[in-house]
Amino acid sequence: MPVIKVKTGAGTPANGTLQQGELAYDTSNNYLHVGNASNNPVKIVGSLAGQNSNSVAITGGSVAGTISATSTNLTSLNLAQGERIWFNEGADCRATIGNWNDQQVYNMTDCAGLGNCFIHGWGGSARNYTLSLSGIPAHTQIRYECYIHQVDSWDAEQNQVYTTNNGGGETLRAQWNKTWTGPPTSLSTNGATHSWFGAKYYSYMPWNASDSVKLAHVGYSKVTTDWYSHTDSTFSARHYTGLNQAAADEAFYISHVKVWIRGGALALDSVTTSTSLSDSSTALATQAAVKSYADQYNGTLKNMYSYTGNATYTKSGTDVKTLRVICVGGGGGGRGYHESGGAGGFAERWIDATNISTVAVTVGSGSGGGYYFGVSGQGGTTSFGGYVSATGGYGANQNRSHCGGHGGYGTAGQIVSHGGGGGGHAPGYNNQQGGMSGEGGASFFGGGGQGRHGGSGVNPVAAPGGGGPGGAGNHNGSNGYAGMCVVYEYR
Image 1: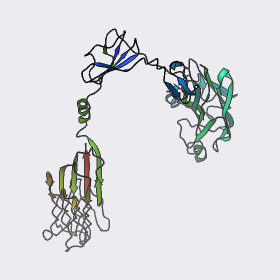
Image 2: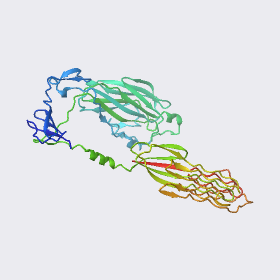
Image 3: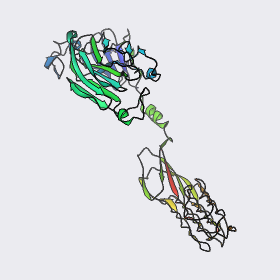
C-alpha cells in the first residue's frame, strides 16, 4: 500500500525500507527517493532547493517573467490568485429582527459586526456604522460586499458605502436615495456594483403590509466593490444612512458582510518529522477499499418515474442495476341501475437492468360508460415492454347480464392480482331516476369512482385503474379510469 515517508538526517534510506511506488523525502539533503520493484530506494530528485541550471516561469503576482530557482526565496513570491474570504459575518441578525415591533428600539450589537446599531426609531439625525478589521494577513488586493435592507417607508434619505485604501483614506464606493414609492434613485458607483432586489417581505412592517405600492419597493441593495490594490493589515467599511424617523416609519439593517483578499506570500505547510524513516500520512486506499466503499450504495433507490400515458422509459445511467415495475390496467365503464365497472389488474416485477437502455411503456385507458341494458367495454392493458403487464377491468354487464364488471389481472409479475369488481344491479328510486349510484371497483392504487345521487354527466375522481361508477336508475354509468405504470431505479 503506497505511502509518503519522511526521513531526517543525511544519507539514502536503507534497502528494503521503501516498497515499490512509495516516496521518501530526506529533510537533511533535500533528496526525494522512490521505491523500485526490489523494494529499494532510488533517488529521483537531488537537492530540491538547488537546481542551479533550471529556471521557473512566473505568471501574475508581483514577480513577473522568469527567475532562477537559486536566486529567489519561494516564500517571497506574491501570488496574484489564491482568493479567500478573510471575514464572513456569519450571523446576519435575523434572529433579532424577528422580534421587532413599533414600541421597542433595538440597539444591535450583532449587526454584521458593525458594533452597536440602532436598527430603527433613533430620530433626529443621520448616522454612521463602521466595520473595522485588523490582523489581516499579507495580501495585495481586497474586495468588500454587504446587503443593506431597506425595510419600510424611506423618504428619499441618502445612503453611502465607503471603504478604506492603503494608509486609511476612504473612497466612496456607492451612494443612492430611496423612497417608499420606487427603487433606489440618484445611484452612482465608483469601483463597485449595486444590485437592487425588490418586492421582499420583512417581519417588521408598521405600515399596512397589503399596500401593494409600498410592498413592491421594499427590499435590499447588494453592494460589491471591485478588487482593488490593498496591502494594509487593517481595513474599514463605513455605512452612512440618512434615516431619522420613528420606529413606526423607517427601519433598516445590514447583513451578509464579507471581505475577500488575494495575493500575498505563499504559506508553506509545515512537515512533521522524526529521527527515523516512518509513515507520515495515512496510507492510500487500495482498489479493494474503494470498491467496498462503493458497494455500500448498491441497492439504494436512485429514481422513481410514474406514467399515466404512453411513453418511453430511458435508463438514467449505467449505475442502475435493478428495476422495480408496477403495472395497473385501465378501469371498466359503468351502466345504469348501479351496475359499475371493474378495476384494472395489478402486476409487480423486479427486472435486471444491466442490458436495458429504453423500454416502451403502454398505459391502458378506461373504457366508456353508458345507458342501462348496454354492455361497457374492458379497460386497456398497461405494459412495460414485454416484461410485465396488467389487463384492464371489465365493463358492467360484460361478464354477465346485470352484473358489475370483473377486475383485470396481472401477467408475468412476481406478484399479480385481480382488480376489484364492480357493483351489480339494484333497484332505482324516485321514478327510476334518483337514488344512489353504484361505486366502481377499487384498484391497487385506491377506490374506483364513488357513488353519487341522481343524474349522470359528472365523472367523479378515482384512483388510477378504478372502475367507473354505475348510474342511479336510468342514468348513464361513468367511464372507467386510466391505469398507471410506476418504475423504480435501484443502483
